Image 1 (tube, rainbow, N blue to C red):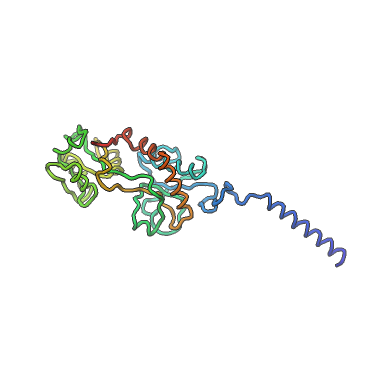
Image 2 (image 1 turned 45 degrees about the horizontal axis):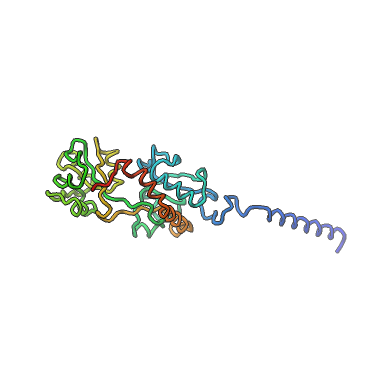
Length: 281
């Protein structure tokens, strides 16, 4: 080998050694450096989707980044369980239907009161449930039901629900009104009958109860939740992309929060008696 060739070979060897040394000192990725960062939409960030707008009491003032509201608080609790600081939670918005369609997602998780169903699970993953919603009784201020404080108070009143629903079955089994259950084709029809004074109260799931009394009914009154044994509750889970590598981790985080009692604390704060939904006995 000639002298110039020897010099070139030595220079190349030195450059290779320098690059190897730099690589040894460089982090594995540009995220938080934790294992599995590449599984997230944005490494080092936890991207959470909700609706636009997002409604009370799930998100207060349509500002999920505040952590105020039931689902906003649950999202931050799960993020913390996964090892993310609050400032590393990124919020995006989606429609309800778009999020549960098959295909890639621009979020890590989505929560908009998604009931876990087999049909939806064919297109997306679900975490274990973070909430199971009971049924609730609502009325309006002008109704005789407005002063009802117990199941016995409701028994003599005209109570309605959409036919074929859990709400309808719960009225029969738990309230057992003397006049029988007043059947309607839909919640909208039942709501109209309540507004017109044709019935005294209606039973819907608790999320619908919050929405109807807070948004749609003039002088709406949420009398309270029916006991847990009243019927089958709807279970809500985080939505993730189908076969997401994060599903097990998010489920483990939800399970840990349930076991520690934190989920119950959040539900009590935002959906419990202090939020106007005591359990009727």
